[in-house]
Amino acid sequence: MSNELLQALHDLGKEKGIAPEVIMEAVEAALISAYKKNFGSTQNVQVSVDQVTGDFHVYTIYNVVEVVENDKTEISLEDAQKLLPSYEIGDIVTEEVTPRNFGRIAAQTAKQVVVQRLREAERGMIYSEFSDRESDIVTGTIQRIENRNCYIDLGKIEAVLGPGEQIPGEEYEMFDRVKTYVVEVRKSAKGPQIMVSRTHPGLLKRLFELEVPEIQEGVVEIKSVAREAGSRSKLSVYSHDENVDCIGACIGAKGSRVQAIVDELRGEKIDIVKWDEDPALYIASALSPAKVVDVQINEEEKKARVIVPDYQLSLAIGKEGQNARLAAKLTGWKIDIKSETQAQEAGIDYGQNDVYDVYEEDYLED
Image (cartoon, rainbow, N blue to C red; front, side, top):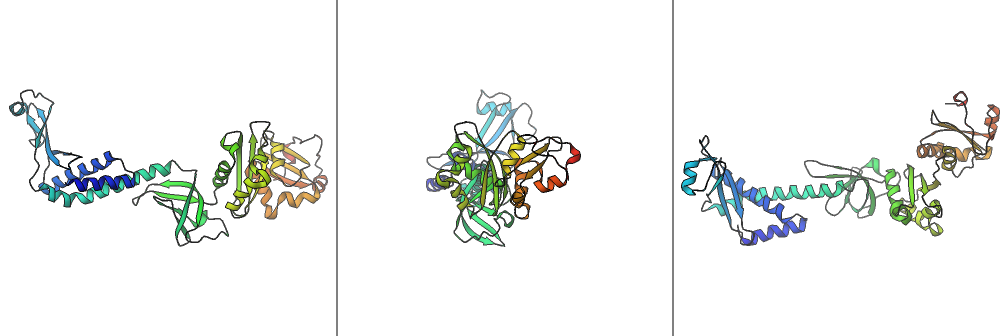
C-alpha cells in the first residue's frame, strides 16, 4: 500500500470527521479480508500497517498447545520452542506470510471493504451526533420536495419533514431556511433517518428557551405547552425569583421576544399565562384573554367548572372551542364553561369565596 493512498485515506477520514484509529482498523480489516479471499486461508491472520511508509505485513497466528488438534491455528510446544526456546503453553506464535504480489491484489479487493467501513463509521458518528439532539431545534435548507415531504439539508445528513409535521397553510420553497424540532432519530439500512417537525409543542418550548435568557438561566421555567400549530398556542410559565416577571420576560421589551417567535411560526398567536400551584387560579389564567368570575374544582375527577360573565362566554370558549380546548390541554383539567345566566338557571351557586368553590360531583355536568 503506497504512502499516498494511506495519506488519502487519512484526508478522507479528516473530511468526514472519522478518527485515524477507525481508519486504520478499517484498512487492516480490509487487508485481512483480501488475504483470506484470495489465498483461501482459514488461519488466524493479523495485519500490521506502517502508518508512515504504508508498508504492511501479514502474519499467521498460532496458539502454543500441548497437543495440536488444528494445525491451522495451533502449534505444538516442541515446534514453538524450536523457533524460540522461551515459548510456553498458552503463548502466541506469529509467522509472516505476506505474499509477494499481495499489494496489487489487496488494492483491488480491499477497496470496497475500506469504503464500506468508512461509510459505516460515518453513519455511526452521524447517528450519535443527532441522537443526542432529539428534542432539540435544528436549522437547515430545503433541498427538495417530493410527495409533500420536505427534505432538509442539515449539512452531514438530510432530515425529513413529513406532511403531518408541517404547519397547515405554511408554504415551503426550495432553498428556504427553516427551523425544525427533532422528533426521532432512526437507524436504517441506508443510514440514520432524522424525523423533524414544525407542529410539535416542543418546537415552541425550545424557541422560547433560545429567545429568553431568563429561561436559559433557570430563573423562569416553562411549565406546560399546548399548541394547535399554525393557529394558536398557550404557554404557562413560572418565575423562581419574585423580582422577575415571568410573563414580561417572555414577551420582552415592546414584545420583541415573543414577536420573533411569532414571526418564526408565520403568525401563530401565542398566549403566555402564569402558572400557579392553585389549580383554580391556574385554570382562570389559562382561559385568558377571557375574564373569569369563579372556578369550582373537583380534585378527584380532575374536572373544573368555570363561570364567566355572559359577554365573555364566546371569548372563553373560543372559535370552534379552541380557547377552552387549549386551556384544558395546558392545565390537564377537564373544563366546563358556563355563563352567569346559565349558572343561575341551573341553580349553581358561585362567588361564595373570593376565588372558587369546591363542589360535589353531582353538580358537574359531563
